[in-house]
Length: 444
Image (cartoon, rainbow, N blue to C red; front, side, top):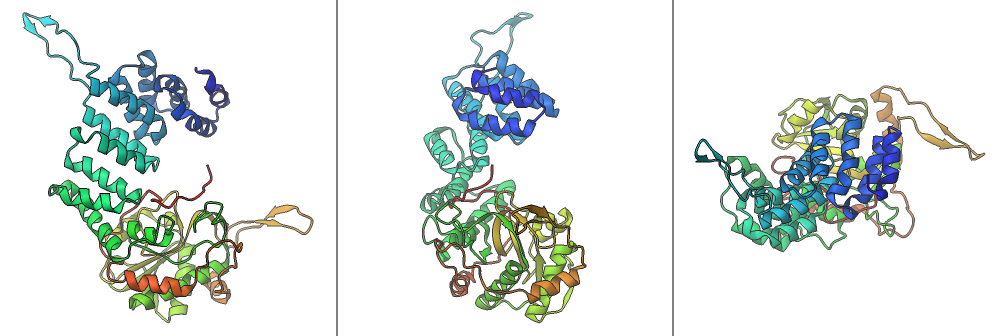
């Protein structure tokens, strides 16, 4: 194993696959694929991924074979290790473009020439490399890669990937230019084309104010409206998102007040609040119903003009999320805490805040005593109705923050929502896995 991977080897020997992955990720771009493959193979053996272990062994045996490089890269992507696929697929692409791997001679079998094994297709490798880079939110690299090798690409999905990654990189003009030249897609790609059309329509209706306009880019890419921006850490790279938040009753109440601001600014008039079954969502939904003067009833798919309220969509049943992907007429979906590093299966129409990790006010939480000792409080097991009363009794005043973060008044949200009203909450609620062009600091 390469000497730079000594720490990764120690972690693997200690049975710590998570630690090993972190260490390997830190080395992935500085080592050749063949140098990294033995450690990735050992990792695969440790966690029982036989396909990846076999592909890594084949690559280690012949580090220059385009077929082995491609198979290894493909297996890495399939198992959520796209960072390790990138160096392998870059090398495979270079070899495929040179024609490496094409047999120089054909063996004769019963007097006939045996067909040569096909070479690895440059286009196939190129697309897998684009996917691997996209998985790591390296969108600008995808754009440059696909433009550099435009001679081997087609429209679908090749240039669609160029459009998508141009959008995620904030390059609206390029995305629009390429998309307008695409041929009409087949049935398989029509939903993706429709999503791009809606995205470009939102960008035209309410263009982002700049590369750090989190609310603007959030709307363009997800179709949703971001109710609050974090008042902490803007200069430290958070740009309006939270990394970790020990949530309280106050941020729940503030989010609902900002939801009311959005509904008024866009002219939406929900007929009722739809309650999702998990306790946190039910509590927030009951509070929303009281605050907005609306009746509340359990969520029923297809109910028109319903305001569906969730605390965290990643905690909602998958079958319910599948129902929410297709929008009922007039339906609005609100999510209080949206995870921006592990986005939910559907994009909410209004997000209270963007956070990597949140502790709900009823969950066990860390508390520091006067003596500086940190203790853990027990879970608040009260029913949703009592939690709702806590939310309603809380303050809706925004946190003053660190004093170095731009202000986020409700009036600005109302102005933005009014401009976005015509293109907001239309079409399907597609999952957007990337954080887009506005970057934020995050936990490893």
